[in-house]
Image (cartoon, rainbow, N blue to C red; front, side, top):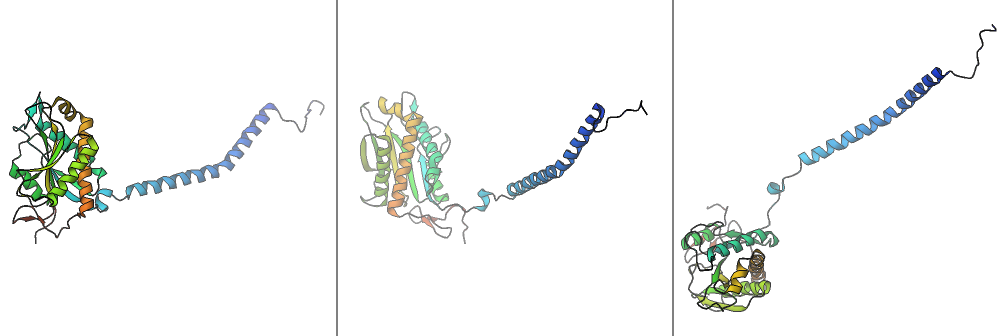
Length: 275
C-alpha cells in the first residue's frame, strides 16, 4: 500500500501527450465536415464554370453581322506595272500600303465593308478591278494613286472623277467627300476635285480616284513612304467615304437587290443566290 502511491488529478507526460493527440483528433473530426462542404462547393463552382465555357455561343457563327455598304478600294498599278516613281519610291507600293491600312482600320467604320481590288503586289487588269466590284456587288469604288510632275515643286492632294460624269452627280459628290476627308486628316494642300478620263468610266456606281501626293516632290515623297502618314491618308479616305454614306443616305443592299455596276449590267451582293 505504502509503495503504491498515486497522485490523482495529475497526468504523466506520456498521458498528456496522448490526451493532446486525442483532443487534436477530436478537433479534426469536427473540422472535417466543414472541409468537405467547402470542397463540394468549389467543385460545384468549377463544374458550372466549365459548362458555361463549353456551351458559350460562338459569336462568329451565332451573331448576325451588321449590314454594311460595300466599298471596293483599288490600289493602283501592281506587279510589273510600277506606276509613277522617283528616287526608288514606286507608286504601286505606296498605293498598296495605304489600301492595306484602310483594310486594317475598317473595323472603326462598321457601316463600311472594305474589299481590296488587290492585296498583294500582283498584276491586275483594269477589267479585273472592275470585275471585283461586280463580284462583290460594290456600291462605291475608290482608286488610290500618287501624282507626278516634271518639276519637284508641286504639292497637294486631289481627287478625280471620270470625265463622263456631269458636275454635281453622285460621283462628284462622292469625290468631294473623299477629298475633304483626306485634307482634314493629312493637312495637305487642297487641290480640289477635277474630271479626267479614268479606267473605271463604265462603272455606274459612284467612283473616284484619290491622288494622295506627288512622288516627284521630295517633301511629299518622304511622307508617302512613312507608315504613320500612310495611316493618316487611309483614315482620311475612310472618313470621307463614311461622311458620304451618311450624307447621301446610302444603305446596304439586301440579298435580293441588284447593284448597277456597268451600263446595262447588274450584280447581286456577294453570297446571294441567283433565282
